[in-house]
Length: 463
Image (cartoon, rainbow, N blue to C red; front, side, top):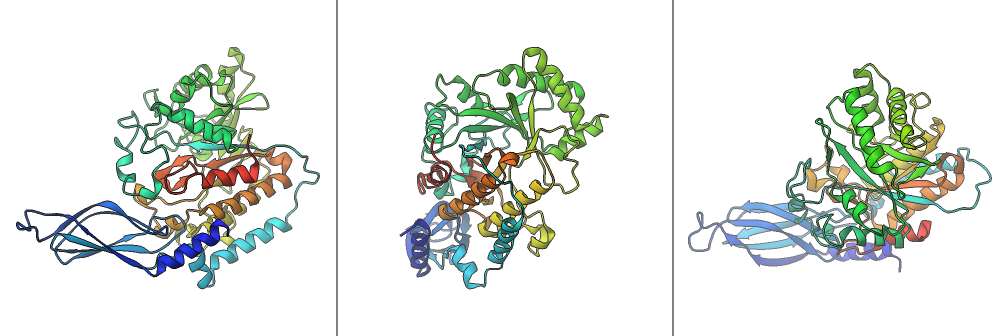
């Protein structure tokens, strides 16, 4: 029995529901003899299909419903309070894929249409045999009281989502052995490089550097190279002098490191938003191409042959050819590029991983057709932003994959790379290693273990 079939069976078992009873701490002010309201601050699970994070105060006789946080499943868990005692019940925690199939699955129709389009579109002939180079983005926000982090204790909210607890526990990314173990896993399961999210303050300081600093301190980085993604989606406008300081920091601190990721012999830098960089450049009388040229004038006297800037953009009107970038990629996509394939809803956001996968495949084809030069193929494990407050469209948070769905997504990516070897050079990057707050993670957890990494190893091969 494969993993997906097993999950469907578990979902069917969960559909029967169940009841658990626990005693909650009574609200003494409201119930002096132990009777009264209930304070909930815990996680609850029913089998493998129902998980919920409960953080509420219920009046005596009251109840509350908490949405299922299990990836790939819908449903909810209900808490009822009676005299300080909480009774938990689970309704139908059905597999999203199964529920969509019962409903006729409009999302699957989108996926079939997208797949048919990709199959019918021209691809490059004669793909040479060779290995893939697969990377993953690393969110460096899991250290308490870190400069630049909006959340001083970032794990506090996540602790309600017990199905997301890392196999390493609620770690500090610079804690003893943490980075070394993460790199061992990456190496063993076929991840060639890690791209650290990089923030730069308005007063010229690097932010959230605990992860990359831990990486650089290791005497053995297990053969996993590194790069940076400048998360430049900020309203702050940087001056030319600030750009010069930033570029100098990268060149002196990272680019000359022997394990830094290179493309065509040049250190690779990912830019989160090409549009934002372009707007910033125009605000100071420059262009993106000017800024990229400025970076190279700083790097070359240091013996660096140039910089391979990789931009992220989904804009249909963006001037890819004249941007100065060596190539393009993305941190994540949320909807397809083609209006004809977009779901008829506000924001055109996916509402299942089936739809999200279809959106990615459509974006791949769109970027190929735009002639972007190198395309570092973006992939995803899904999306579920509920711990960080949820998406504008709440159903967009149903877009987290199961391991089986993730495997299918990776297989589609491999086919695209094989069909477009000059465009992609078989370079890919997965979002993300540890975006637990956004529900985009492949790092081993206590619930899923190594299942997501196993899909990467099986599809692209181990190192």
